[in-house]
Length: 174
Image (cartoon, rainbow, N blue to C red; front, side, top):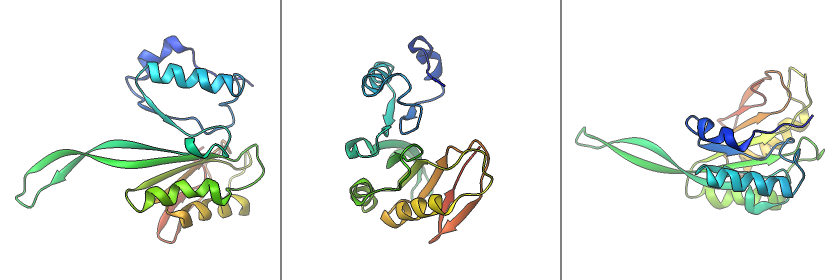
């Protein structure tokens, strides 16, 4: 299967989506690395942010800091709008048959000491209703590195969730 989105659809799509995760097994469908370079150019041209890479060894692409809008409650009771920096980090392990290396987890630790880290992982066997031990091992390693939660995907079915060290892990949203 080859999945893509035609560039002329981006103006309409970006009315609703401002952040794209490129760490998945279909990012390479249009030819890697040329296809991902072209995808990034189209996303930059559309004025949206992206993070992640098909290849998890490209550690410079694992995390991207995103400024999320927040409302701050002041001691006076007044609210003020602000921006909260959050590191969005992502890995693709579906086609690799392995979990993260120490180098691939290093970016999480760099950000976790300064801001929240939201982790996204493409992993897991398709059409399984329960996460495998391998999925659990990968998710736990990412939490141990400092992520505040893990959202995984790939099985095409909803899978179980858990709290690991008080942090949410969702193994597949379906």
